[in-house]
Length: 391
Image 1 (cartoon, rainbow, N blue to C red):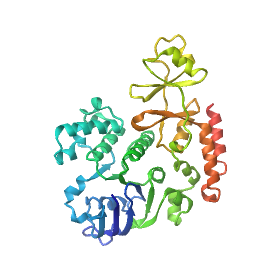
Image 2 (image 1 turned 90 degrees about the horizontal axis):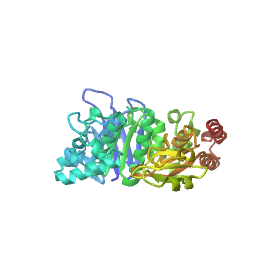
Image 3 (image 1 turned 90 degrees about the vertical axis):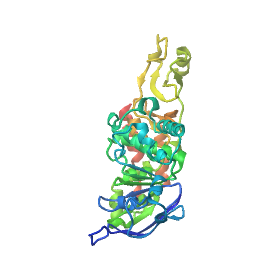
């Protein structure tokens, strides 16, 4: 559903100054729009007015062409997914009960709810049998955030609001959660409004970015590419920062470059056949759901009677939705100068290599040759030097 804000303002009782003043913008249906701005700029207030957690003082907000104020507030919120920092889970409810909150309010039958909970846990990478009956205190921060996203998606809402949902997790987990969200969006095509203060996160996730200033004034509203190439003013330039050339790596996804294949096997497969396929190279061992779990080479298979337990754990993997920046970081941490790529539900897709990445960066540089502000002529040389250091 398209969301339109027309001259929206919010002034809190007892305050002379508006927290949000005269904001107008259109969020296209099925697109991922990121509000980015400094603390206190009103970006969260602006987002919360969409589902009327905060009522606007003036102006008009339409969702799918319907005035939000004409919809019962509770029904409106039940039709809009909402995910916040640390998941916002109810501590006295199990994971399954947390996810089922809105479907129960909508009076879904028990079987439909149970099926939906299982489907969503699988979708966000958690095993239903293992996690359904746990309580939030028994989960890691990343697991809590996954459950929070599952709960927001429970009733399959057309709109999803996300208020700095990954701000409280460590950088590695944050990157993985971002990738999973992008993978979900590729499948579901929700209209997503996402609030962050991290411009790199905005570039990675957003189809469009709204850079907001004081009182949520829209300083620039455009694609990440356009904002990186042509910041509207000095304030936006400050958000872009000096690392604009590296930000270009966040504009291409792993799915946009060549993905190579390596031999694969499951634990019950023939050792001899797997060894023959690997030859002088290396291969990947998959679990029963075709998710990569370990890598191995011919040395690991010598004398082995079973693939079970053979090889070494995989390091950091990337998904098809990951950016080339993510892929670079994963590759530089691996001894094979490549990173394993996963797709929907974490299933194996292939590998991306440092050679492919260097060629992609070189092509990206040539494409943007007319924009010296965002091109680093030595970017691919730096990547190549880093790769040599890992070999």
